[in-house]
Image (cartoon, rainbow, N blue to C red; front, side):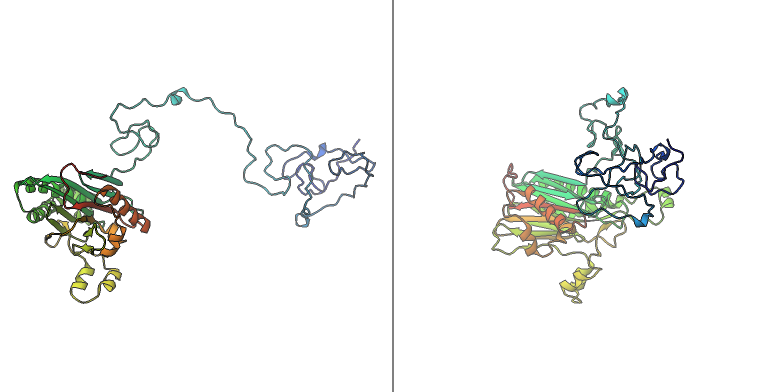
Length: 433
């Protein structure tokens, strides 16, 4: 029989320190009135799992003491804290350390709710040919690029592009820092009036500080390709055809600036779409390049004992400083203004000044047409040649992938686009191995 509530120094369930007169544990809520009174006889302490009353002598239980939290001592190495006298369901306090947790212990198993048959059935399979979500593989992708089933935003088509066209190939990638790909390219094959083959690659780099740079690069590359496909079969000299292609590309970009007056009223400070352009035409005996801006063309011979070369000169602040003799190349390209371009396609360009040049290499090799997203990581011709695989002429797509990977491994700070065009043009029907 108990005439009064027993006095305990700690909760028998969680060992939380108690004060005189506590009826419930302040940590776990244990009902202290349910604790039986201490018997008059001296209890025994179980050791090594032996039950009380075993073969060991009984040890008197020390008198209960009241401890403050700061007086609590840790157990010695190899000892265990005494377990709680009963299960504590949902207690936010650790029975060993007394540390309060933010969440209650989670059960080992959860009762699963019966699935909703409307959801379990899933959406109907889209008709064949419908663009399907890359996440759920079931929902149709709407015109804004989102899945109608799970709402997942789909990767942009231009984030990574690859193409082969006969013996030439190109790869374009968004890179690791930009939120979209503002580069574009177009590949093409044609036949000259004498029946000999011709191949070409056009690469455009949208000017990020301009409005709609991705639209500008796409429009320019397509317009240039259309012009080349029309001019080369008619017998236009490839260098003249390249010049006309750049002019056509410029007109296409300029047309993007023709917006309704209401659009200008809402965005009076936006500038005209703009991009750079670089291209190359290869025939059995001739290599032609053309450009406006700072995208480049490199020549890498198959025989690596022969020197590679850069075939273009940048329309940039750094190039102007070097040409004027005010800085050497190392100083100019180390300046923060180095990549400020002085020539581009766009309605706000100072003037259109297409650059073209013709070469007649005396040995086979490959032409690398690229944006600064690549040549920033292989600026010198020797560096570019080192990055180009030895079998580039017979594996142009593989080579383009390797070069894009080289830029990404270097940091991928910009969009990366590269086209690989073997020289001389292989016979019709030849392609990547």
